[in-house]
Length: 320
Image (cartoon, rainbow, N blue to C red):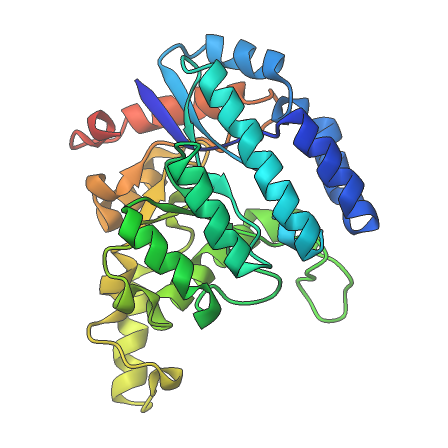
């Protein structure tokens, strides 16, 4: 069995209600996304895809945009509950397809997010929660989010960390939007690395050393730049007098980065997977595809990812 730990689905009732409540805040970019990719909400398409890969079981998550970025707190609370109920129903009804789910949380109301995490885990049997690297413009190391980290460490269940960046974030100051898919092809790995840096330097992993955080897209930029991270830290500390921006760490930053988990959702590319494996280790690397985000409603990501994982050396593929 292959468990795809980072794939996405919208329960149809939730999707319609989310779009209605978001109104004009739901941009045309996202609207086109869902029109072009009906596999995000069609069980028929999802099942036809999975029929081609009978050893795959999916752990379901809600896709972006994160609901707190497009709805007000009262709506977000209700939508998160609706999303999780919808995912739980799918897991219960189709256990041969879906092995579990990670909860959608209303992160613009942290108290409500804590209650929904408890409900999803205790009542619905969810196996983790999903949050995004940008929470209403706030970094993930803000102390207001620490109670969630404390809770998930106590549950010994993972947080799935999804990058967030839109084409409205321009790549140059004199432009109004990102061009040429830079915001997703390169911006999302950057956002993942940025979120990891804030969790590492911001004291979250220092305070919650057993917290499990699964980073999307093979850990973003971190594995490839691991040696640069080490050298930059040593150079700036030794010669430049860098003072950690006020944070005191008990060990080198690279050791915190190694506490994260990563997935294989880079749509193939065995050498890149080996880079992530070398950094995180097989015990911190999980199979995932980012289904159904491709031009074949999820088929292509499996067709590319599975052989790339199987080509990895050192028995890593057997552990995922």
